[in-house]
Structures are given as C-alpha cells and as structure tokens.
Amino acid sequence: MKRYQDFDIKNLSHIKIGGVVKEYIEFESVDELKYLKECGKKFVIGKGSNILFEDAYFDETFFSLKRLSHIEYLGQGRVKIGAGSSLADLLKFMAQHELTGLEVLAGVPATVGGMLYMNAGANKISIFDFVENVTILDEQYNLVTLPKYKISHGYRETEFKHRNVTIVEAIFRFLEVGYSFATAMGASDLKKMKQPLQYPNLGSIFKNPESMGAWKAITECGLRGKIVGGAQISELHSNFIINIGSAKFSDVIELISEIKFKVKEKFAIELEEEIIIKKA
Image 1 (cartoon, rainbow, N blue to C red):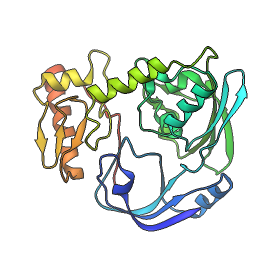
Image 2 (tube, one colour):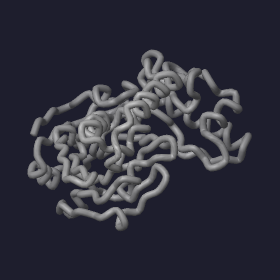
Image 3 (cartoon, helix red, strand yellow):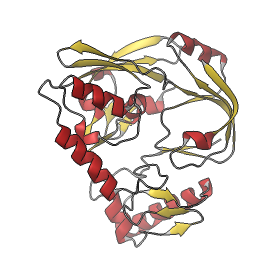
Image 4 (cartoon, rainbow, N blue to C red):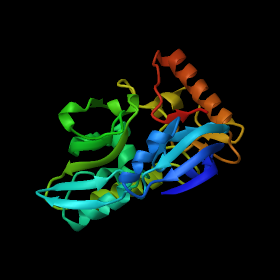
C-alpha cells in the first residue's frame, strides 16, 4: 500500500475544493484492506468526481482502491471487475469483447466502485441494470458477495450509501451483440457540448425530480449563471456548479442552498443532492 500523511484533498476533487486529510492510502491488493481494522474514522474515495469536500482538516483516513483495477472476461457476457477500475477502462474492455450496454455512459469520469455506490446512470440506463453480484468488505471486515436481488437499490440510490462497507469488485452481465462505438461517441460528444467540462465541476448537483428536470427548475427560477465567490451555476447546464476561480466550500454550499430554497418556493419541489457532501 501507499500511504500519505496530511494529504491535500484538492488533489482528489474534480471541483478542486477541499482541505487536508490526516492520512490517505492507496491499497494495492485485497489482502491489504485488513489494515482498515486499525483505522478509526475512514472514507473511501474513487475519482472524486461527485464529492464536495469541506475546506477543513479531516482527522480521519481516506483510502482509494484505484489500484484494484483488474478486469476479467468470464464468458457469456459476464465480466469481473475491480472497484478501482475506471468506467473508461471498462468500456474499452467491452469494446474489445464485443459487449454492449453501458455505452450511453461514455464520458462519465468515475470508477466502477463509485458508480455502484450511487447506482450512477444516464439516459434511463443505470449501472445496476447489468449487475450480477457485488463483493463488499462488510462492517465486520469480511469479504461477502451479494447477488443483485439482495442489494436494495433504486434511482441514484443503493443500500451501500447507508452502510459502513467497501465495494471491492463486481460481476456484470452484458449483451454479446457488439459494442456500439457510435452510441459511445455520441454520448461523449453530447456531454462535451452540453456540460461545462472545461471547468472543475462535480457533475449533476441534484437528482431529477419526477415532475421536471432539475436543470429546468433551476433555470426557470432565474438562477442560471449566478455567482457566489469563485463558484457559479453554469450558464451551459444549470444543474452544474463550476469553479471559476478559487471557489470555496462555502460558496458552493450557498448556491446549493439558494437553489433548493428557490425551487421549493416556486415549484414546491424538494431537490435532493446527487453529489456527496463530505464535512470534516
């Protein structure tokens, strides 16, 4: 394992906001995870693409499984993959083996473990649509493999968000009918066109309510482009908050609070964050 003391969390954040964590670890094997028993408070991080860190000191251990990035083809459309593997690596592997199913997610900067944690998705496709089972390190630090039917999950939601467990690997079952490069390229190009990817950001801030898209509600409240400090509600996509300078945690939180207040006031809708807000 690789261990770092007093690590700057900005290096782990897509929006480039965050303070310092007491210890940061990159595990290089599943066996090394037993070290977590010796840690006190801890937090697992993937690519940091949807986590807003407080700019404060975290007296805890952050750890990453990005080095647990094995991918293995088991046949009949089944793929075993380590939680630290990136979605980009998984899609490349699927293309090589003529598998299909996740192309509409191309361009999402996430690890497989992070996507499983929140049941990430796009265009009415969620990653759990293709899950066969998930192996976790449970609350007692035992490796347990759970079949999909035993895992509570829904729209941008899984039981893992409410348990003190670590996702280690998963087995997916995809269709063996050929990878769609056109779909993947189209999804990636659409993100570049409609999302402010040139700025540090956290992706979609809010889940979409049933009645209307979160971006539409935010726009109709007249909040598109609003700036607080170094943070701005994107002009391009109003469900994104971007770092246009030296944004602080408090800047983003103020924008989130104002969005929720205005949308509730105008539409009687309680917006729910899709991002994770991690306070010290």
